[in-house]
Length: 404
Ligand code: FEO
Picture (cartoon, rainbow, N blue to C red):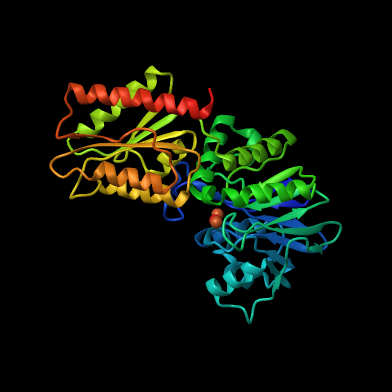
């Protein structure tokens, strides 16, 4: 019943749409579900490009069986060993009995460490620049280390201008549509940004290098088929997604702020609103995001479009609130660059929270242009005026940094 979808002549999408998933990789939120895309090329050699998440293997296998018998498959390409792409590899190897499984040098190590089948699987390492002829088409490979893991690689089919990009250019979207030109551009932009800024952001330096390499190789890309989300098939969409990644990796400071906080008895929350008023008064738009109401992934997507991140927490047991500690730890791992930051919060008797937040932000490379603000118990009028003025000063510092 499940069918493959032809995306180019004799090249098919055979993936799985996961409408239910909200937990992506155990640490990130996917509020709109996700997809595990994989592909089949029918040439003289029959090739599978990637598999899918372990528990979706049967879905992809059913789509494949609608095209050919699994045992007719000659090659499987493993662009990345993470479980959402290679989890179903043992099933596909068992059913297809491929002549060769291609992977990168680091992919070989990762396959061995995941599946412990180095002796009985026909694994063959391919490196950047290697080429495999499959009939009238060729497969060429480009290692894309750290986009997303050390083993990751792209597979390019020059005769089709078709780039199988694995995690790169992916989006967490569960949709009936398969192509980027079939959905609203703002939905696509948000999903691309959310994916990049929660999964790929720490490797922005490598993204720049890989984009430069793609430019240097002068790949004539007509279609980009990622392993998550929608496929880019029009020249303007290919251009759009390449430029989006270049901009994401650049992390230019933007004139926008986010206030991230948790609160005990609403004092820190009240301060957040006063700081936001100050920011607004000097023309800096901002969003206020409580960490009880917003998942850390949603906050990171907002951080991505903000040049200023203001973090608030009351002092709790000589530290910060647990959600604030978790968020700071999450953001630290994602290594955002070119940001201003500030700390605020209430306290009862010891008052360490703002120092802890300030130190953590400074440790992540944030510039801290103003003194942190703290207030004992409940902010009075003077404190709220100070919060407002601090918001103004932060806004002015951000405008000065953005140059507009
Ligand atoms: Fe989609 Fe790195 O896994």
